[in-house]
Length: 262
Length: 262
Image 1 (cartoon, rainbow over the protein chains, first blue to last red):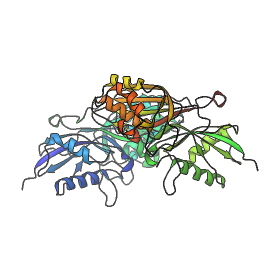
Image 2 (image 1 turned 45 degrees about the vertical axis):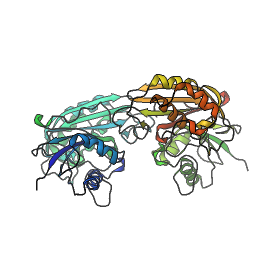
Image 3 (image 1 turned 60 degrees about the vertical axis):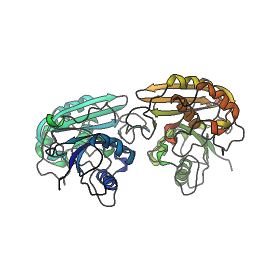
Image 4 (image 1 turned 180 degrees about the horizontal axis):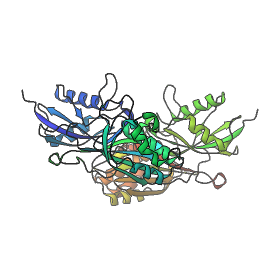
């Protein structure tokens, strides 16, 4: 039997109500909710593969998944059909048919994560689910100086969970950018891949620098030491958002070009 | 025994997780969460009076409550103390001591509600909790013309729940203002008081006009008829936010002057 058509789907989600991306029995997860809905729709088990896991509480503006459909609606109706069936915190944004060579995880070229800090004196009712409220002032220039030391290829053992799933800890960071939007400070990280908790530990370390508790020029030493204890705390998950996933040009490059908003 | 100091507290809340403002046994409500926390803090029952009820799912930028404290922290520490104890979706914004003549409900002079529609083709992960997603286009000029007929003092029987708590249905609307912010359309209603579901039915009726299903110049007839069946549907609660409450000048007028944000 043919495996059918391969569909690539772009999903946004508010991570507040999910125990992360990866299916876990008895818990509400992104993969679980989507697979369950596809089974209800089509009457067969459909395996959903994601571009990578996101941890509990982490959001996505553009997570990418693929799955193979033996039959069912054409790709250009998929977003419409799923939007009516999925809960409001799981938003199908774009769908298309791709050839069998495409794999949501193995074909990834680069990823972008965005971390948001809210520096206002009072937390905001719009932003508390999507930002780390940090009313104490931060030295932005020092944080930017520290961030420059992260660019390029490094062994990020110091900046990932001790129990990280990935064995090879070498990754390349192409861009760390700071954007201010009112009281919010967004920090964007673009690179060829990220280890477990890596962005959150990078943010925790940059914030430590911003508080004056760590020197920017110590970043190279922390990288070299390959020792998690030298980096800062792990920033809370709800400030983090999987912002974009990039594939090779034959698969459309960056899969989504949305307004700068969730 | 003296009733102690009277405290006026301004509260913001994300209504998504509450069964409305008013205490109901076994349900999570704003009044219930606040009273329970005050009892845990002080060891005595404290009755909280609000400026009015908000329905299940309705938000508040600045709900006002008062309560009498036999002892406990000074008013200027109250926000800080409560912020550490209350959940993230219930945000104490301002507190002050007021004289016994002040009553959160009976002293109200005017109130402002804001209703938000999101007219983007796709719902937004930031806004879906705080807006009515309405991707179909609306005739804004017709809605503004309809809104002008609502200004002034009217019997709003046609625009409130059939089972509304209030007996006297005459209210005065001083301002209906439309603000566009990207794909969001905010409609602000300012008046001396609002009946149960009144703002949501007004919005449902304005949207009916915006869709071309009702004529703007029929608003006076609908008002005169005093018949709920002639008005539009009740707009969903999660687009509605209690925006501000105004008291007489001796109690500080508008109690809060925040940025135009939640």
